[in-house]
Length: 438
Image (tube, rainbow, N blue to C red):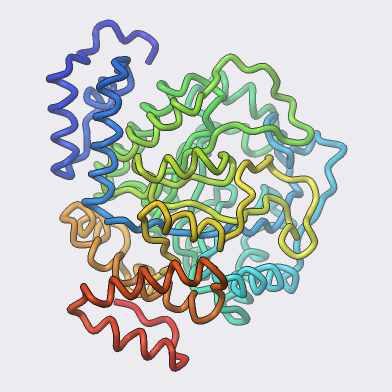
């Protein structure tokens, strides 16, 4: 993506592309290339504003919240940038027992979380499919967590079927970098060294029955423009083949990690670059959720909510046993240390609606069906009401102090606007009923 002189970034052309996104149409790669090549700072303000408008046309003001739950940092790969790499002799290794995983999930459920992302390193014996199945079953049967997603090593189709059958909602896996020489250098040994095996992971997951998949690249390993274009090209291939693409695109940026062997890389990704990437993801694939993790500092994450981000993690720990005991040997350093309650309060103060809902998974709104609802803007009505219902539960069970007051004022305003029996549903929640959704 470095050779950009021949790409048309004339203001008229850029505005035509923005208008296409506002019609909920997926951009083609020529149009994506024009956005990637754009240098006019005044036009970028229009791009950012259009990304916000597209996001709000699809999802309204709602921002989904979740937390990662790390199961294991015992790994057979040697990814040079990761604290879990097998060559990190200073790492303190830990794989949660099933009971410990339940303890972590229970603690998070007690804080108000309803969805968790299970994260595990690659170790077929210690953290393979049988272990994951046991953990998933135990969390569902013993806690109030309603949906589990999974970020695991690539699997074969049969193991993906088992993972789907266990009740996983979204399967998430990042290519890390699409630039093959960089990929080979960064992944010198272990199963992850096989570029093609990882590249085909989403095809195998979809073949096994996953309709909701999460994708991304690790920004900073190679030129971000090239990586962003390659990821979108991968998404478009999936759309053409299966009728749907990723449910989410994550925007992870390389961060320091204990034992990392990556230093002084030449591919710096600035905060302004992150804003551009979020906007391009939103415009290129209007219906796709854009996820910002706690890798990024609080102030930047807050700004990205107005550019197109629709999901953020909160209160994250990136090591096994991190919530109960504080953990050790993180995968990477986090930038946003705020708790779930603090982030909920901030989201409300910015004029957005925090959401802890899991309704789409309860109602089978996934894959091509979800895409259709999103592209026709019908999903927004579901999102708004389900977000409010999840927040009413949070008020009754977890909220305190100023945040509780903020939420109650917001919900009072929403009741006055509702014509769908919202007040009656709130009363049911006050009486102890849970998991009310549409």
